[in-house]
Structure formats: structure tokens, C-alpha cells
Image (cartoon, rainbow, N blue to C red; front, side, top):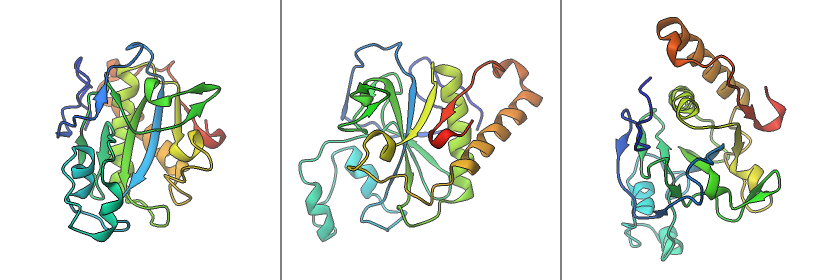
Length: 207
């Protein structure tokens, strides 16, 4: 999975599933933050259609009692990574998806304006799968090459007290190592794709 993000903001390896829940960014050149989330619907259940249904306004509220609480909610994300590593994209990364809500980062509010959202299929108390980290690493590098990303944060870090994802079992160290390993493999086979001077700052003080 080393395809570049297209000029249209879509990633070729991802399954495209268009969401109506997006709008234009205030500044299309100001895309600097990557936000990591987790989600499962119903909570703790994996593999079903309900997450995609939520992001595309197709929720069957009668399918499970817990889904009734989502009635009228209009949210989206740019990418969703399944437990097996498959990636679904709902919104062009050029556009503003509605994933962060009330949020701020380094004194800047409205993180949706300048961020890209990635949802991992999971919960705060379930370890994530190696295939998810591998897909996340490849996607992170594809996004870094296309946009002016400088920072990677968890949803809990830009909305403290309101959100808890990706949660304590998300392994930031393993994520960083996976990304760096992916960069190294890319450098071996396609050195022209790697900008050695570009860096990302990860949450919790990781390099």
C-alpha cells in the first residue's frame, strides 16, 4: 500500500464510500494535523456495516437499541481502518470531514478545519491489530507526502475530558516504529518518494 494520495484527495488503496457529511476547508493549504480515533458500532462489535452507515447517514436505528442514540447525528471521518487492515475512505482529504467536534490543538480551535481524521475499528479497552498499524503507517506516510502534516494526535488529546479515544491500548510507540519502518522500506525501493527532511511530531512526546 504505497500509492500516493491523488490530487483529488482520495487514496487509491482505500475503498471509496462517499459521505454527504463534509464541507470545504477555510484554507485548503492549511492541513497540518492528523487525528487518530477509534469506533465500533454497536460498542465492542466489529465487522458490521453500522460504522459506515453512521458516516453516510444510513443507520438502521432498529438494528440495535444502542443505535437509537445516534438519531440525527451527522458526523464523518476521512478514513476508517478495519480490524483486518482494510481501509475505507468517506471524504476527500482535501475537504473538511466532521470528526473532531469541539476541539483545540496548541491554542487553535476547530481542529476539523486543518486536520485529517482516521478512525480505527476498536474500543478503548481492546488492543488493536498488527494489520491496523501496518495500514495506518502506510496511510500516514501517503498523507505526509501529500500534505503539510506536522503533528499526529489522539482525539482524547485535542478534546480532553470529552473524548477518550484512541484509548490506553493504542500503542503509540508501535505506531511510530511501524511508520518509520514503512518509510525505510519505501526509501529502499522508491527513494524519490521519501523526503528525508520531513518529520512528524507525535503525541506524548514521541519523536
